[in-house]
Image (tube, rainbow, N blue to C red):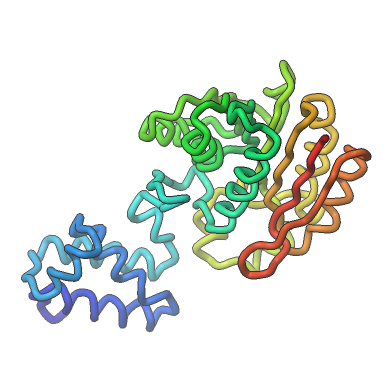
Length: 285
């Protein structure tokens, strides 16, 4: 390999390497900026700086790993979500921008139905904790509980909560089972919803590196929605809000499940910024 002396040379070489391997070229900038420990402004100002050989070697190892399929977030250990930086790893799903839209709609509904800004909130299948932590940070008066079936995921979520000083009650257990001791004002969930038959259509960075327990569900991806639809009528307050993230082809099916579980409630499907069905909300008035 030709000796690399300057930051921009490392960036150009890595961008070309990733492009040749079918990856996004911008990943080179993200990984190099992370390796150098710089803000974007500082990184841009450093492009003509000389680069230590050992720094380049560490950076290039990450480039090769990403070319082989390892997600950028597993190499940097972080992902941005709703303006905050969360720790992520192989035990949790990498947060997606679509989930920020679930938060946004929930906050608008909460302002209407819980003007005191002190609702009880449950996040089912919390993973890295982004939903629970974001809700607590945006509504400091809320009492937030988060559940997950994975003890490893809860450890990651607890570490993220500590980072932001978010006081959250974490409970180990399957879906809403740990929540049966009381009633809740708001219940949110981004559960596993991908059908097993869809595995081959996923990017290898997702299929081969993210936890399958957080990705896939039985019954064409609907199994966990069915189970929650049975669990939630006994524990949702009036007024109460349910917000589910869904797969883009699951809107009608999940809407039907919630209408059957809450015949008197207002249930609607909401599209994401890309005009795909992405959320189902149930307002139990």
